[in-house]
Structures are given as structure tokens and as C-alpha cells.
Image (cartoon, rainbow, N blue to C red; front, side, top):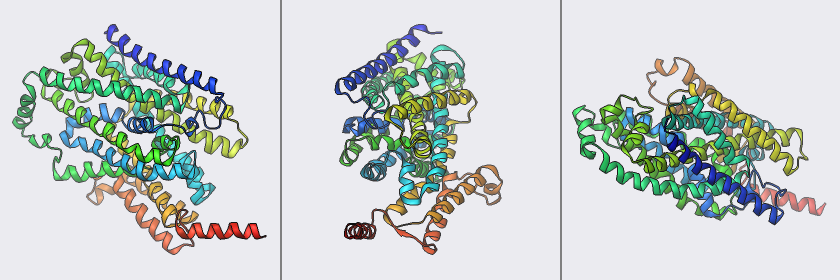
Length: 496
């Protein structure tokens, strides 16, 4: 075990997390804001552009962007970068569209927005599904924490996940959303400085340079692995499929949009795109390059797809750079861990506890319930962290579940809305998703290579548009017709 490396990485994380948590606590005490509405879950809706930008970027930059792309590059090569490119598109959509809509309407959760459009039953259904999907992502983040710490210590992945989860809990339970945001800002600067230095170090440390990496794949008749376009089949099944999954799931998920809800204003969310997109997008380029390099070197090739790249980092770089880089990777995973534990707890607190059982809940009540939710969900996630499938494959399956919600919210805001159509569309898409995963249907029709997102998009559009065309509907919430009807209703009430 490399105790020096472990202590260095853990010391950095602990100092940043505890230091920021203490600073925020002191500021709140001085400003008498500790009991203000939304202080824990939504940071009093006061996050500035820089904090919103980096937090949105790091929320969707965790295990999958690091260990998932190390692993995926082993099998698919440079086309794996499309997972990262898809997140750039996602952040543009979130900052210019869905995140702005959520901030404009002043909601605390996405299920709350669903209720505004489609009623209380739809809110309850979406609450359960969205929380479950985000918890599924949390289990993958625990796996990532376990692998990174196992690389430094030689422990099992599960033991590493336990230590990582303790750090992740400190990341969020002390001061909530505000702590996550400001810790992310510090970690982003630290992380990208480390990546720049590591990029130069990797170039000079490879046994035969990048030319040796290139020659390895050419000699293996796998030169297609060096191109971001891969093969036509991979472009259709992986690159396009991953992009659609990412945009249509995360673009409507509480996991990403809680940060937008916490911003100072709608304009803050819009401006954050200039920070969020590049901070997230560049990271995947580096991790895929490292994954390709590790596979080409025999001693690291023998470690297999999960551990080859982390082991290469440990062996090729000097101690101080290994510590810096692993601390950066751990910080990125911890940031996603924090949001994937915070947001399902937020959904439970706001949409279940407060909405159904305690409408008069105070900020202190919400904070207590949210903290217990964060702890319990994290413990459950750690329990299954060592028994998970390949990371990118698992994430694509999870993402397909929120696809119908994306289309329904868009329709309900800007076209038509119907409670019955919403429920019909969601259940049709979810049945299709399950059929695609757990029956022989994909094999029977010769489309087994295509990910779940294609069938859920098709079901969402066909059933959603069809049902809205034939059922009784109301105008979209943000359409001119809806605003006119609301104004007339208000005038009638005033007259009466």
C-alpha cells in the first residue's frame, strides 16, 4: 500500500471540503441565513455564473468520464470521445433551454414542474422513476470511487467505495448545495492545472511516444480505433445513441437542473454555458487518450480494461503528479457523487415528504430529512458498488428511462398538455425500454446492437404526439394562448 499517496490525496480532499463547509457555515451565521427557505437544497437561489457553470460541468463529469472512458476506449477506441461530446451538447441544451425553464418557473424539483403541467399523479410517478435513475448513477459513482482508491491502496473496490463515500458525504451534508458549488469551483481549477501538466508528462513518459501507440493499433489492424469517427456501425449504435441518451435524460434530470434552480437568475444559467461546456468537454479527450495509451503497453495491457490506465498513471508519473492527478480524478467523481446523493434526497424531501406528508415543513425539517436521505442512499449505493456491469453500458440503460419526460415537458410547455397523454406516453416508453432489455425482441428484429434510447425516443414521439392529437388537451404552459387564458381568468376573478 502506498500510504504517502493515499494520505496526500485524502488530505487535499478533506482540507477543501471541510474548509469550504466551515466558511459557508460562518457566513450563514453572520448573515442569519441558516433558516432561510431553500438554503440547504437550493443555496437560497444565489449561485453566481462561475459556480453554476463548473457545478453543472462536474455534475455530469464523474466515473463515466474517467474510468468509464478508460474502459470504453479499450474496446471502441477514440470514438469513445463522443460520450464527452454528447455532454457538451447536453450542457448547451440545459443552459439555454431546460435549465432556464426550470429557473424561470421557480420550481424546486423537476417533478414539481411535471405537476404544473400534468397533475399530481404524474408528479408522483416521475418522482419515483427519476429518483431511482439518479440512485442508479450514484451506484456507478461509488464504483468509481472504489476503483480510484483501490488503485492507490490495493484494497478491494468495495472497501475503497466506503472510504470514498465518507468523503462524498462530507462534500454535501455540511452545507448542501452551496458547499457543492464552491468546492467544485476550487476543484475545477486544481483539476485542469493537473490535466495540463499530466498531458505533457504522458507525452514524454510513453516508452515509444505517441508514435508507438499509433503503431500498436496499426499493427493490430485496429487503426480505426484512432479515429473519433470509428466505424459506421459504432457511429450509429454508440456515438449517436450515447448522445441522444445523454441529452434526453440528463437534459430533464434533477441531477443536472438542481444547479440551474439554485442560480441567481435565468440569465445566470444562460451565461454559465460558456464555462460548463468547455470544462466538461475537454476532459474526455484526455481520458480516452490515456486509455488508448495504456492498452498499447504490454505491462499495463495485462491489467485489463478497468485498471490498465490507473495503473499506468501510478507507474509512469512521479509521485507528486500521481497524487495531483488522482486527487483531481477523485474530486471529479466526488462532485458527481455529491449531486447524485443530493438530488434523489431532494426529490424525496420536496415531492414525497413535504408534498404528501408535511406541507408545513420548515427549512430545518427539510434539511434534516434531506441529510438522512443522502446518508441512507449512499450506504445502499456502496453496498452494490462492487457488483456492477461495465460503466458506460449501465449508464446508457439508466438514461433511457427519462427520455419520455424530456419530450412531455417540452410539449407541455410549448405545445399541448394532457394528464392522460402524459401517463400513457411514459408507461409506453418504459414498457418498450424493459422489452428492449429483458426480452428477445431486439434479436428477433435484428437490431440488438442498438441502445435502448432509440426505442424510447420512438415510443415517446409516436405515443406522445398521437395521444396529444386525439385527446382533450390544454395549451402549453408557456404558449401565448395559455398566457391569454390565464390573464382572462385573473380579470374575471378581480371583476367578481
